[in-house]
Image (cartoon, rainbow, N blue to C red; front, side, top):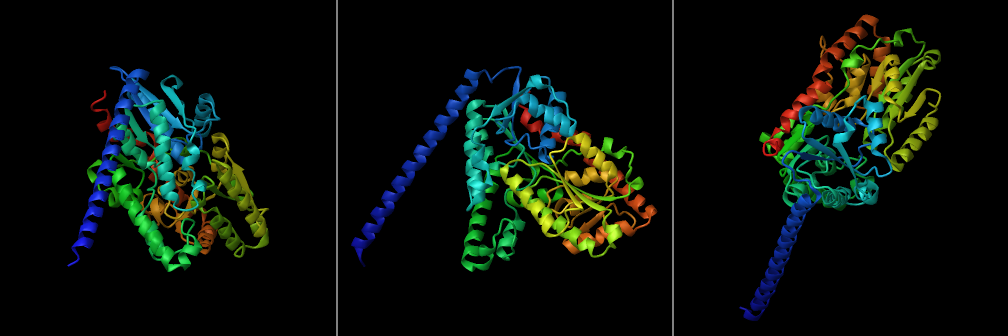
Length: 485
């Protein structure tokens, strides 16, 4: 036996163990030091108070004007109505927008009025670290590490007593819980990674987050699958740090239960939708000479707006020219950044390429009043995102009496749209041809059948109202307040 080689291996192992122990000790000391620093900083800034509870809400894109922002502002309104001694801190990266303008947009877009005196905006300068364009490779990991840095900036500027992440940055949860010593909760719109994403990579299916060069290469597929599996494990650990978990749909709940595995802390809280006012709208589309197909959603890649254009292209083949000239697709959406604006320009170019420019109209960042007018005029709604986590725009269109055609997956399939005979409240489709056929079916259906679907849709959306959201949201966050109020 070669004892010299054995002794060398043992010494190497002993040295590595020593280095690892030293690293772990240094990390522990750094974490302990940070924890004491932020505890002292709370005292220095006057955050600790016997009467005031500071609730920090992490929402770096609070001025985006999408469904996630409606959740944010309804949550803030619920907190203000329930607790007199709560001060709300909004961690945002919209550094160029004033608090007055942010709250003004919340009023204009969502018709939500808030008490500005109990809201403090903490502006984060490093929001660019969570933008996907910075990480062409290992995007999930890059954005997650970026969110930790962004969270540290927020924690340093204004440490809260209670921390709630409402944008899906789960990697900030252990930071605020163990370093900031906060009570921690989260509202999950969409899991950062999902079982479906793992399945698509494993089966080598092309998608916006699984590029063609990865699909074609078995080694790159194996490498990405390994990376996804490791990331899913870490994501599960950070998610378990949350003391209360709110999910927005059955689809999201199923994935979060698979990944985080804490069912006793997980609550399904449907996002708030403006249904009361929309259900009472007086429709005018029956008196119109045109048929409006309405799309509502942010200009993000996963919304798959090109599929809507392809559906219109397919629909044109089914219609006589004199009928086709009366059909108009109106795409309403908000642009968060330059990436979204480039995407919008690409969509406009695709419209011209498909010779649809006379039948498609884009409306960007429209005020709520204008959106309501479109709800009155539209006959059909279209939503094309695969595995949409919920679909606030779908619910609002249904409340307004618009017959929806949504993707046969995710929240629309599991929670919102029913297609069974006798209880149908909308349509589901999976590709451009199916969408075109559904729209054609709606156009050709008698008024009595369409009215039956509209009435069923309007009756089904009450469970998604803002009132229901606020009741369930306040119930879910009780564990965070038990030791603070």
